[in-house]
Length: 362
Image (tube, rainbow, N blue to C red; front, side, top):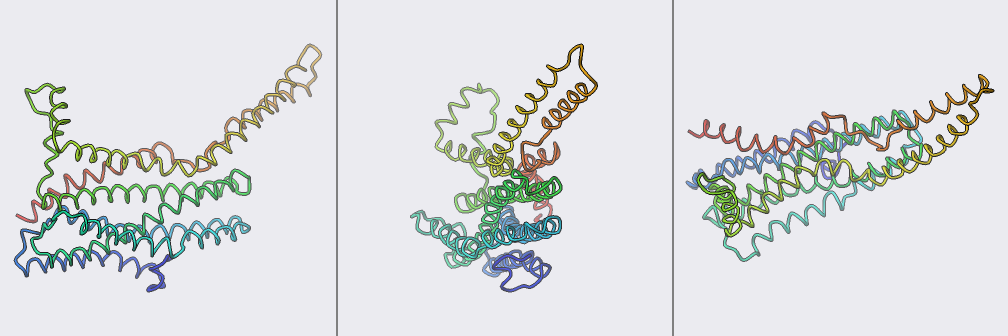
């Protein structure tokens, strides 16, 4: 159930889960204590840092949950269809390869940290370069957690494609398809939470390093001002130097909002086309048989002719109901859930987190 590098240190899921749940929060609390010891309380950006902390912690937890879901999927499918065991074993080996799960996220995390230090801009919200270096080590670790989970989310789309082909070719039946559908919907929900949280953390990091934790000035551009025509407000916003930041903001959250559904559908598209072509070919054959049976229905038609026509009509109706997608979205509830998750996280951050901090930090 454990993917690398968790499997290097842990043999069971529970201690790995507990470690991942506590590691980033405890180290962040250490950073808070360091700032209090150095009398840097004004440089603790509570709301933004808690958002980043939740994303980093969630990244580690989601990776363990994804590994568990894949292990359970493998167990269930093998119990239903033992012949698929070699294919699943090969998928596990390829998708959980050390390079993609460990070394590539480490390299990308180093790049993410390095960009800020080598960009040429003097970003130092804490006022102390020594603490900023310590904070960057914490950020590097958190980036690795979220990039590791992002890699898993990306790789698990391959499972949808490969096993979807097995469904399309008839090597997996209806029960196996339902099991796959439930698995991939859960993965899509996790990916939705993860991508939305990553977008919030990117925004929070930008606020910390550009505005030193103060309110984003772009809010002034997206607020309607009484007494000024809407068109004039749009023109004023367009000419404002902050317009590019506002455009990036809306592009980021717009993409995060539609990403969950795209993530669920896109890997199935190739298989969807195969299933559509197969269904169309079967429907054409059914219509041909039904038309031939209908032509035999005349004054001299026998009971056998009537039965043949009824049988052809029943077969055509059954073919019409054949699924065109290998995995079901999970009905209206599943669709709404995938679309609502990003907005839900924004609501939690902007309303509940801010309200809770005002009460606690009074």
